Length: 208
Image (tube, rainbow, N blue to C red):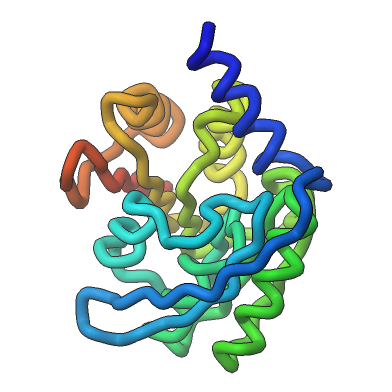
């Protein structure tokens, strides 16, 4: 019961349009495995306040090569998308989140990092009707519930070009295994591209 209440609290806190917490801002520094240093402003009420969490860091460091149009869905304050854009300047970056505060700070961090990105507010793929991408990346909001992460995977198929990739990161024994199985069901394929400390990065390819 306690875990369920904690998950519900996290859901309401992060996966909501208007977080109720008083705004606090912490500036953080993140060092990529290649030594490149990135700085972000992180707001309270947005995952993950005050740090780049371990799963997000692993996805950033070990995601499969991206090019073309790349969507960071559930972008939070923008760490994944912004770093991918800085490391791969030729990509066209798109980011979105249901959380208005997250979108506000993703825009601030994108400007501070001197990158161009199309950043929109909305639930899952609602801001991207009619758009298709070469890659979709996310640290999915597992605590938001099965319906949310299943829709993230299912709708990704419709928003990817042929040969496009969906790349997700999760703790394998804390919901990730179910996500992996569902990715295989929807796409007909899935692979682990990185394993570390119980965390895995999964990739599915939309075959023609």
